[in-house]
Every structure is written in structure tokens, then in C-alpha cells.
Amino acid sequence: MILDLEKFLAQERPHWEALEALLNRLDTGDRLHLDDARRMHALYERASADLARLATFAAEPESRRYLEALVARAYAEIHETRGSGRRFRFWHWFLVVFPQTFRRHARAFGVSLGISLVGTLFGIFATLVDPDSRHVTMPFGHAEITPTQRVRQEEKSREKAAVHSQHASFSGQLMTHNTQVSIGTLAFGMTWGIGTIILLFYNGVVLGAIGTDYITDGQGGFLAAWLLPHGSIELPAIFIAGQAGLVLAHTLFGRRSNLPLGRRLRAVAPDLVTLIGGVALLLVYAGIIESFLSQYHEPVVPYSLKIAFGLVELAGLVLFLTFAGRSTESNDPGTDSTAP
Image 1 (cartoon, rainbow, N blue to C red):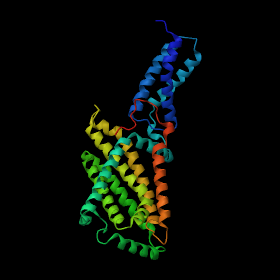
Image 2 (cartoon, helix red, strand yellow):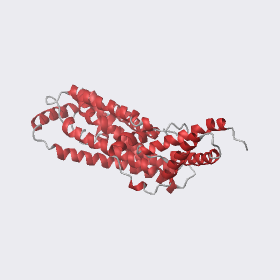
Image 3 (tube, rainbow, N blue to C red):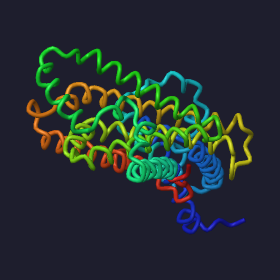
């Protein structure tokens, strides 16, 4: 069979370049997911066959050398036995892998956020229609006194306790509690998502009820200054935990997959660990902010400053999750970056 060399090179070079792009991702420490790994193996086999065909021609030594080096790189990566010895690079994981994983399951995050918003609307409606429902929907003793009474107590107590409050202990308690809640939200994905949905909905009900209670009592400014500094990070972290729980539930159902359950769980496990690990770090930060800033009120800290700080945090988190790590993402159109 006579090979049309120019046509052959024009047809096959894009596949070589795609293989090289995947290998470059591995060189930067990026982790390939199941679809990308399968694609790399298929491209490696194709490049190997191309090399065998090209080796019979002496007219393209540069292309042959390029392809030989490419196939050798791919062979080394595919048959590497020291993968477990690779060093974990924390900043690469947090700044690249975590936001990439979040975007890959963006649809599940949207569902998590939507469930929480439905719960919030229910809490608002219940509080407006039946004010006495606050005794059921509001935890932490919020139903025992009016928001105005609580604001007066908080402003007075925080002004006196500003010097000797035990911030470190309180911050540690917040981190532990919030992390346990988030891990529980993920773990309840094992109930085929029912437990995760209930937790997200209930969290929304509480938020809506408390928000409505404070706003109708004329304390909306205090509420915003109290919640935004830590809540702009804490609430998205809880939604991401819900996202992880819904991803786990989707894996259990196994829709659009012929793989057995064990293989599906092994394939999604790295993403779940990445999501919940990112949530834990976000909650550590939120706990520190809640202890050292949110708990201070006027006249110690102006409410306008706290609100502005919270809005800047929220904008920064949105930009981080939206754009961080995009430079190393695969451009393969066959990969659904929003799959649950």
C-alpha cells in the first residue's frame, strides 16, 4: 500500500499534539481523570501505529524523531510503576486541582445550591405566614428573644469582652462543628442523596427564617455584618459539601455507565476527596474569621467595614472557583465539565 505522506502527516499530527498536551499536563503534576486517561491510551496506541508506518520512510526524519520521543514518553507514563511515590504538592492541589474538580461537577453544585434556596424560600414563607413557627425553624436560641434584644445584648457584651474573649478555643469549636456537618452532608450521599437533600434543605430553612426575623425587626444591617464575613465562605463550602454528596449519590445510581459499582466508586473517589478537602480548608478559614471578626459588633468594628469585607471575600471565592486552573484544563470537546 502506497502512503500519501503529506496527507498522512496532516491527518495524524493533531492526534500527536493532543497526546503531547496530555503528557504535558502530567509533567506539571496534574492528575488525569478516567476519560482523559482512556483517551491518552487510545492516542498512544494510534501514535505507536503511526510510528511503525512512518519508520519505512526516510523523507521525514524530524517527524519520525518527534514521534519516537512522544511514544517513548507516553509508554513511560502508561507503564510507570512509581505513581504512588509522587510528591503531593499542596498549592497545586488547592489552586489547580480543587477548582478544576469543582467545575467538572458544576451541575451537582447548581442542584445543591438550588435545594438550599428552596429551603430558604420555605423558611421565609413560614416565618411571614406564621411567626410562631420561629420556635421550630430557628436553632441556637434565636426564638427566645427578638432580634432587637439580641443585637443590644451582642453589642454590649462584645464591647466589654473584646479584650479577653477566648478566640482560639471558639474558632476551634466552629471549625470542628462545621467540618463535621460538611462531612455528614457528603456521607449522606450514601443514602442515594436523600440525607444530603434533607440537610441542604434544612440549612436553607434556618437561614431563611433567621434572615426574615431580623429584617422584619429592622436589624438587617446587623445581620449582614454578622453573617457576611464568615458566611460568604462558610455557606458556599456547605453547598460544595452538598455537591460532593450529590456526586456520590449519582455514582451509586450509575446512570449512563455500564461499569460495576466498585469501579464507579473508585473512579469518583479522588474527586470526592478533593471536594471535601477543599471544603475543610474553606471552613477552617471561615472559623477563624467568625471568631476574630464576625463576633465583634459596633462600636468595636463598623458594620459597613464587615459587610464590605464579606462581599470582597465572596467575589474572590467566585473568581477563584471560576477561573483558577483553567490553563491546564483539557480542551477535549468530548469531556463534559459539568457532569454530576
